[in-house]
Length: 212
Image 1 (cartoon, helix red, strand yellow):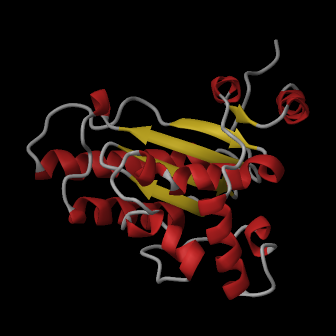
Image 2 (tube, rainbow, N blue to C red):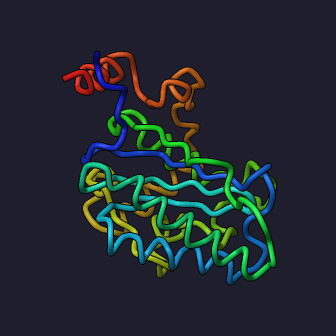
């Protein structure tokens, strides 16, 4: 019997979404956001992973990750979720689940969907009508990638990002134009249901790989 599709091999990029239980608020103060980011830093020291982008919304989070070791994605997310749930329950005298089950993860075809995915993450606060421009939102790394602002936590630059320009200034200018001006490729629901963000050839290659 072929083994089920595995989406946690090292070297593949993942768009990870984690929601509050019953879509309830999971970040109620600035310290809550900072605590979650701190847990990301702690988890990275234990489970090696690249972090290319993130946004923390009141009720959910988006992370763009690439594990450096097979299986490290689940351990990384488990560390963060358990640590934050313990913090949240103690601080707010809350009983029960903080997050809505297991995180969702979609493997990303970097050549086609990397910037579509990072744009989707950056524009979350705008779509939610919290801000008019992604630069106005504090709990994302848009300003890090687009303006070179100091990061709350370490952000990795993928080679695809580095190819936007010959130096940091050129890359930041190109990134701003890409996120603000371009609509990018939409993340279609069929790909999301399959757990893969990619074209037909990419999905076939991933499925063949997991059947070996």
